[in-house]
Length: 410
Image (cartoon, rainbow, N blue to C red; front, side, top):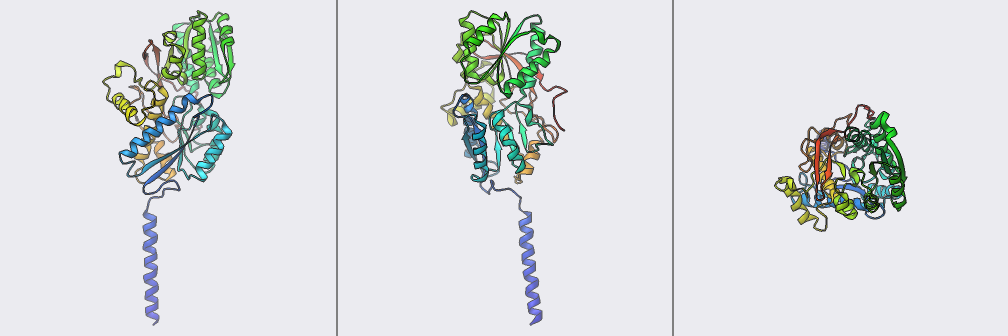
């Protein structure tokens, strides 16, 4: 009797051990991952003064629809849950908490704006939830030691400002400069980069005016014209940039116009400004312009146009924010694909920090994505472009937008 009981105990123990071993062998995922689904959260300004950028989120949702129709990622469909914060950081915090605690998202991806992402960064990092490919060029998304769960995607605003400074020094070294800049972290970062890049010649900035994202700026443009400046740097959101370009034309003022990449949308800034008024405007880019006939036979652009027709038919094919969202979503899919069946949050961040010369097909030739455990700046290159009345035309070579003194606590 004792022998039988002992044998049963041994069998039970072995059975339990087998169950434990089998469970241990299964990949560890997380609350937002099942055998059929990956839940991804996002915050976007679908309403409010920065609603022009909402097409980023809409294009991302459409891209994931396409991926799901093709079978998903390693058999798992993406459930993309995007919320509107109207560019209000407090609302962003509320929505992020709801996405994490109630919707059980596995990671946050591509959320827009510096203030909203700063407001949610500590919350997400304390809970070890990836805050991946933030849609903001602030340098705050590249502190892998202090915030190991947060990573940016696009080139930094500060580095972009230095690119404009270098261009002005090379092409217009003795010209007076005026700057209309948005009074927030985005505007301050780019303006700081401009001043740093100009160095000792920063005194050529004879006027600068800070403005809010939703104000009328006719009077401010009048003041900048009266400063005698020959170069005008527009460092503000698309609607304000459009009004400024249009107002300068009304005043018969024709300075060299530099327009920040964040506002360089034909659909959202140049067309509202009047395309004829925007001829000659200079900006930066790292994505292909689908309206440029130079790309009409490009397989990636053909794929983009077909994508827009099928998955985002209400979108504008000349909207650079839509192609931005497409490329960012494509990068996330690359990361998740690299994860294989290990979709733990730790492995997602590990793969995001292991991109080697990855190039989205819609990114300009020569611009690649590289990351590492101490390098959370995925895209570091841009090129100068000039608007010819229809499309953006490249001028010069690809520029490495990173600079030696860029803060990065690696």
